[in-house]
Image (cartoon, rainbow, N blue to C red; front, side):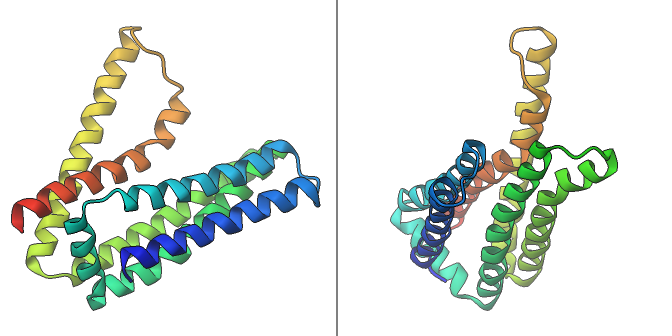
Length: 198
């Protein structure tokens, strides 16, 4: 799958989310928070489309070449349903928790359900890593290492600033942003490392 096709898939998911939000607002009489959640999820996918459009041409061509390989095709085929499932499960989890679940164990299970999609994404990424050639594996592992070290350094510095009462963070929000930040730094690191090897 080319990046252009992936962009169209993301646009499709975003439009489905916006249609669901519109149906919830005008026909199903959902509360504003539920409608806002679907709008937010859709905007996240549209932001992904925008970021893909801003990528340099050499990078888009490299990605198209990478995802044309059998390992890349399998990875993309696994990735898209996981992303869609993540959006649905995240919405469902947030909605159930907002409506109140009295049982603490049940509330814990519902709260961590979206992490299951991330676990499936990690499994697909590890399978992809095992199936690619040596050079691509080296690029991937360097990018993963750089992003992991970068996020660790950032969170360590944030913890020091929190302890010094320079900044104040909501711990739950900070923890939720670990994975997206890791993925963002991984994308940037992979571009830089790939450019060095091409």
